[in-house]
Image (tube, rainbow, N blue to C red; front, side, top):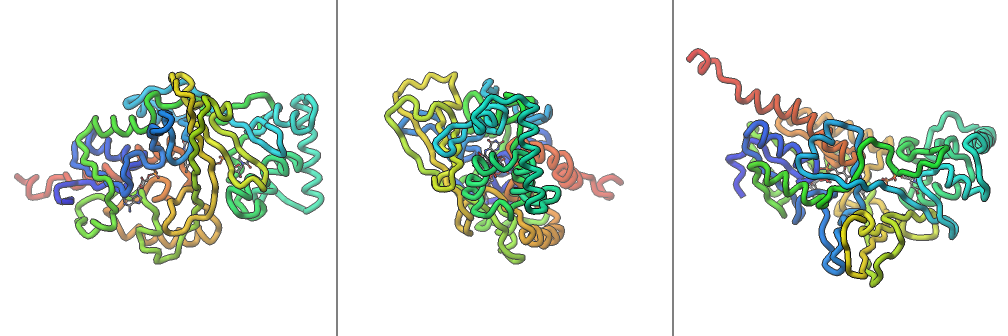
Length: 397
Ligand code: FAD
Ligand code: UDP
């Protein structure tokens, strides 16, 4: 593989890398090459048709598009339309089913009686106060304290503790409070998982978005190529957009960053509907998986005729070096390691680190696209346009 003629080499064909590649090719007309070590485009948003059921599945787990960003929403409209899908999740706990995220229906079901918003607020506040008095927990320092402060002890024990332990394999009292901040708590009957202004599923699936990005521009794509096998070809005047794990880029010199990975166990069932909805969480610590995904429900508008369905059971664990890193764990030790890598990045002016793995940040798809558009408008353009400035000799004519 020859990289000689390219102005920009993008490592990773996920949303971050492909957005930058599309902009560089279409907006600046510069020569860009995208490579990915996987055999497909799309990064973790990749979708494909399951050959046994004919249903479009998300190989790396259910992906729901949602955003409040007008810029990101408008940008994606160039490559896809969206359905009106609205994500709703249920949780099974101790043999009963609850609506998730926690809302008034969840609270009423957990306490076995209809409750008004005011009654629910008082009940949660009483349980939260009791927790503060019992263990002197101050302003929500960790996930456990924050969860009990926002939903009370009963709901925490029922719906959060076991799920979080399984998902993170760490005690909730040792996890950062921000993790639970992602999950809203509502004292009304709004049961939508996301509250963003825009939400939906791409009409033709995620992979079609990436294919259209490629088709819209002059981008050369190389799949099944690991950057570290061609790294020595890169010249200092070429810009690299690196969206792989930061610690791997620097050969783990400052240490390994902590990641969580997930394993999916695929099953095809000879029924038209396995669980009645796209995602059901399993809160009990003794159920080994965290959730079951059933992909047919992501596209109720499609005419899936076969009485077959594909489900994935999701299992969570710490990632080793050879696993796919999914979620940054981000402990204090991780942050110390990261600051070492940040110093090393500053010495590499022609490499831009980005995306979920390259920034060691949990980014949703819209955040990865938003960050890529910003990076394109700032660092990428500055690097490439700076190169195009005529030399003093040329200016003198
Ligand atoms: P990625 O999609 O991970 O792409 C990085 C690419 O770089 C990969 O394809 C990888 O193979 C490649 N790469 C890495 N190293 C190298 C190398 N050395 N050489 C060549 N290629 C390399 N977001 C939402 O908005 N909604 C959701 O519902 C949602 N659900 C999710 C569920 C799960 C289980 C997970 C893990 C994530 C979910 N996300 C969701 C987040 C979403 O997946 C990310 O926002 C998105 O994938 C980020 O894009 P990216 O380009 O930064 O990274
Ligand atoms: N969570 C939980 N029970 C649930 C769903 C979520 O306890 O049924 C907690 C868990 O700690 C999780 C956090 O809320 O890590 C954030 O949930 P989200 O769905 O955003 O997690 P994701 O799977 O996207 O990391």
